[in-house]
Length: 239
Image 1: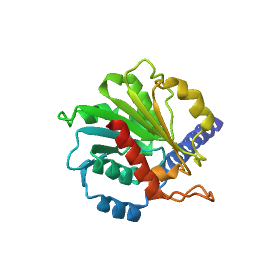
Image 2: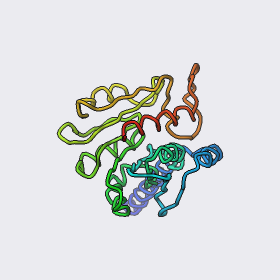
Image 3: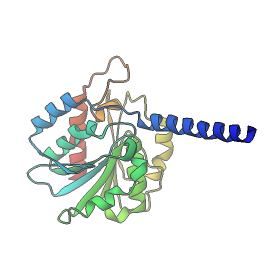
Image 4: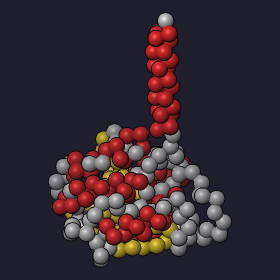
């Protein structure tokens, strides 16, 4: 009888832990959909739900493409404004919805996406925060598949110094979420000629449109300004 009670208790404990993990993994920052819809509409680019987990943004002349990995625990739609801004500047932009909003669970999806677009010859992969780290891990595995890597408020845990990848790294001076110690530690993994751009007053959340800023006073840049400045720098880098 005691053995049966022990088994039942063990099973209930495992179920409780599983439910807790599912609840934890299901929590995420939701996109500010009203602001996103308004901004994307203003960009006058084509927005296509290409598959259930791929959003495609394209302008009139897109000769290069960017596959973008969202930040962890962030609804992927939050990055539609940045993708639309890049498309307006001539870069076809592909936004990927990740399992449980975590790019680490589908690291190599970018390689599969490329097969849909055989006419595009110049490819970039990138992402925000942990999405940027995931993109860097993928790029390190398939360096010959891409011209470059674009990381926003992120860094590469893998060594890219022996690849031919161009790298653009962007972050904000008032980002209180990105780990600066890790960022500086892993700079050694980037090519010596990598491009770094630091946004004055830029914050972590403003690469997308979701939630509220990190309760910081004296921020002199708004969400749209940071997105457009980021898109401008991506355009310069790609061109």
